[in-house]
Length: 165
Image: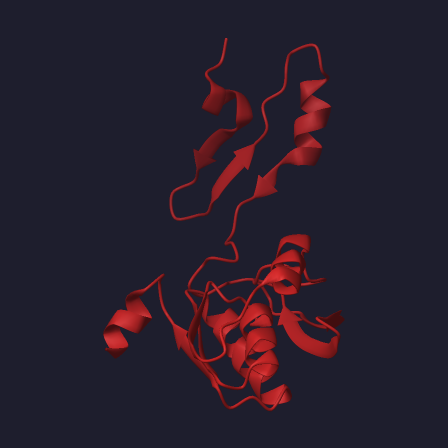
């Protein structure tokens, strides 16, 4: 019997090459045929500092809180093809102060911070993300929407804000 981790993946590496994973199957399930189709190369994720995947840009158009928005997206960032349901629900239900500071931590291409800044120009909005591709897309999207009350910082969690102070 496998432990939980071993049951999910079998891991192996080749010296100087990427780590590979494959899903383990039971002997009763034509394992040879299954594994030959399911071997997956693990690369990077949207929380990688510098995504190595080829950049494939896209455009998302959405109506959020009664306003039209469009966002440039790209591979290697979170939710590149549509605004995910969690983000949409948060935007539709967020309560913004009349003035003050707002932090969008892990901003991706900037959806939440851009909507907040456009709804309330009296806010000082800071967007941060560890992913350099995400912050460069956020800058493009801020410029596209003509917002002046947004600052974008690159770094891990609170480090860019601490470094700035």
